[in-house]
Image 1 (tube, rainbow, N blue to C red):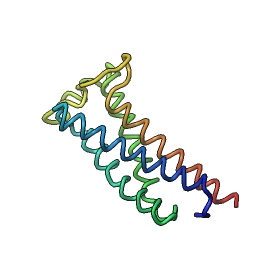
Image 2 (cartoon, one colour):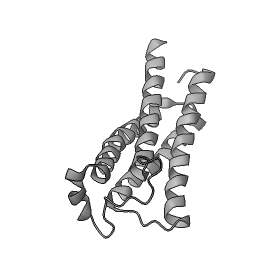
Image 3 (cartoon, rainbow, N blue to C red):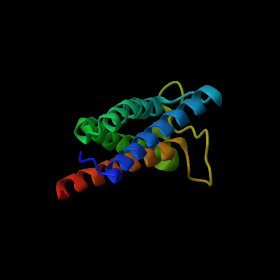
Image 4 (cartoon, rainbow, N blue to C red):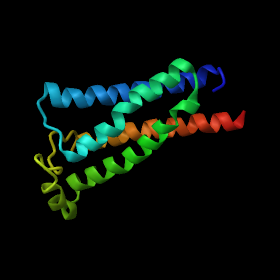
Length: 142
């Protein structure tokens, strides 16, 4: 990654987004006492390594070592969307009821009638993925 200040800033924003998502998920489970469902665990498995991946990339100022982050965030987008649809689409809600110990259609939070935990995770994955793609496009342009 070229020593461009804007590229370094974007990489730090990506890392910060991953940290905020990690902290948010831990807040909901450890402070609020919300037991994660099976799909929440999948999203955590995809999100938590992003803190280390993008942190290392930011420290080394090398986007090439963050390629696994792009892949994990891309997969995370689809997992989050599916989980959100299980919560919000009546046709899929029954599927989420047999998800595990905690039903995946459980909505611990529902801010403004549509913002749930999988929605928040999905937004984080999308932000990370899109910003990473912007960095890749910047690299190709130089």
